[in-house]
Length: 394
Image (cartoon, rainbow, N blue to C red; front, side):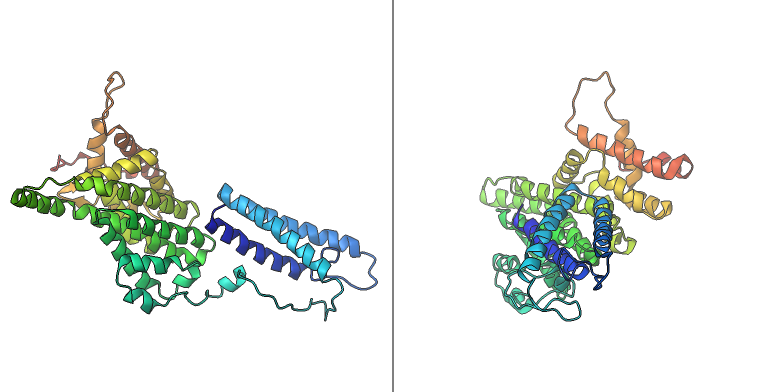
């Protein structure tokens, strides 16, 4: 397990140990309903253990990912071991009204219950972050934030700073800082999966990556024009800017797709939270690529998700067909996106054609999008009038 997973397991372990201590305050050999002179004490203990075991089995069945189950299994084993050890060491301690005596101890970890109360003070202040002289210095400060709870109070300001630094780093020749900031987003996203209360934060983290990708694509033509002028003026031969940014774009697409799919598969869809991101993702991934970077982003998504699971999971949660159609029928550059998709799949190679075009994966991805849309809208609600319109862009 990595450091983030270990922190999650430790937090769950502490929380489970507290729960066991509440249910069995006298230790593993006594039930919470222990009464002096009751001959059914052993039976009551067995029933209580069965109830607790069933509750944890139900919890395990609700887990969506095998990694979550493994973490819970490890945490539960640790919690039981610590609970039994503490019960043995405290067996001779006096108790009041069935409540074990409080012990004072120094620990470097915090219980999950403490974290859910709103977190702890930031290891660094917002003023320190804002006064940092460079993106690299701010990144070092962000690295000191170990818990996602610590972001909640000042998240609006922190989110803006992160987006700005991520975009600025994407314009540098060395994408290393950008990749580090993306990893920071991923770390906080993975931590925030522990509770629904972090869902708005997770949407913001996911949107940061997509927004940055959109900005990188938009500045490409302007950047290429400026470099062309510099070459003519100074006689310089510059490396293609795509060589600097390819790794960063791949990381942005892959991490966004994983985060978005995770939100949808855990039933965290919210039309209000997803509104801006829905429009942005349709424009970036489904329209005819206006630039090389846009084409690269679409190709990466098609390669990592040829069956368009990101689209399928989202469509399953969209409340109305009208909302879906309104997004797919957006008009961009005098062309409708759904019509562009339809024209694109008409050029798919025949079975007897041995050619393997470079955009083969992208065409398969487009076919998946059309197929998923047809399955959701059915033939009766599919916007055939839009498909039959002449696509002026084509």
